[in-house]
Length: 415
Image (tube, rainbow, N blue to C red; front, side, top):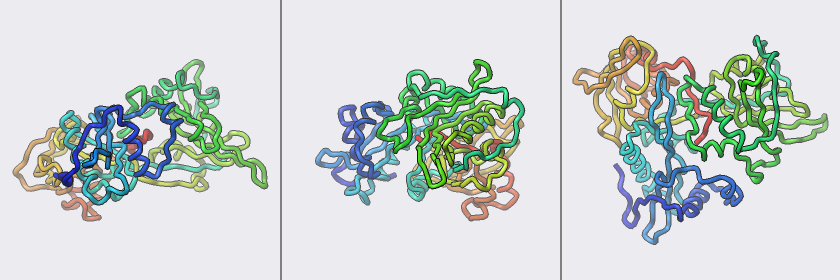
C-alpha cells in the first residue's frame, strides 16, 4: 500500500469546495471552466464519494471520485465502484499522490461492499500498474450517407418520429430503452441516478461545437417505442454541395427490425454526407447489417477497465460457460488478501464457488489479467501467447472457454 508524503492528507470533499475540485480537474485535463454547464447540469458524483489530497497549505493537490454502479456481468450483476474525476495538479505530479488516491479508493470501495471497480482510462498506460485490466473494446464508425443495409423483416412497417430533445420528458424514455437494449450484455452499466440520466440528454449550447440542438429519433410500432437515438447535425457546404455531419450520441434498439429502421433513418438524412456512431460493441448489429463495411472508417479503442477488489466474491457473482475445476494462482501487490491460490469450481449451470487451494496451480496470472478476463471479452489463451498468463495450452484453452461471454462486453455510458 502507498502512503502520502509528509504534509499531505486525504479528505472528503464537502459541497462548499466543489468548485476547487473542479479547478483541479480542469488543470489536470487542460479544460476551460464552463459556468454554463455547471449551472445547467448538477454535479454528477455523490458528495460522500468525492475525495481530495489536501496539501499543507489547505489547497487541493489531487482529486478523485466514484459512482455507485451495478455492472452487468455474464449471467448476473455486481456492485461496482466507477472510478472517475481522477486528476493531479500539474505542479503536484511525481509525488505519489495518484497511487495514494487509488489505494484510498480501493479501501473505501471494499468498505462499502463493492467487490469490483471499473473506469475509462484517459491514458492507457496508467491504471494497469494498479491492477486494472482492459476488459472490453469499443468501435466507432464514420459511415457515408446512404450506406446500404441488409433487409430485415418487419422494418418497413415501423415509423419514425423526430423531435427536439426535452430533458424533462425524454430522460427516462432514453434510459428505459438503453437498459432494455443492453439486457444480457456484460459491462452495459445503467445510469442509476436522475443526475446521470440528466447528463445523457443534457445539451448546453456551449458544448455544441457548431452542431444544432440535440434531436431525438423514436422508432414506433404503433404506440410502442422500439428504438431511440440522440443525435445532432452540423451543417456544411462543399464545392459539390451539402456535406453535413450527423453525430449520434446514443442509439438503443430492442430487436432487429427496430435496429434496421433506426439506422436506415440516421444513414439517409437529407443534406448530410457522413454519420458518426457512438461507441459500439465490437459485435454490434450495425456492423453485420451494413452491406459493405469497407467504406465505413473504423476506430477501435479500449472501453471498460476492470479491477477485482474481492476476488472470490467477484468471481462468484458471474456465471460461466460450462463446468470447470481450475486452480488459479493470483498475484496482487495492492490488495494482498486476493493473492494466492484459488480453486474455481463451476457446476453444470455455470454457477461458481471459490475456495483457497493447496493444490498446484493450473494457471498463474496477475489480478490485472483476471480483471481483463472478467467480463468475458478477452482470451486467456491469447494472453498466454503474450506471456501475461501462465499455464499449459490445454489449461489456457479451458479457461478461455469457461470465461467466455456470448455477447462482447461494452459500456456506452462513458463515466
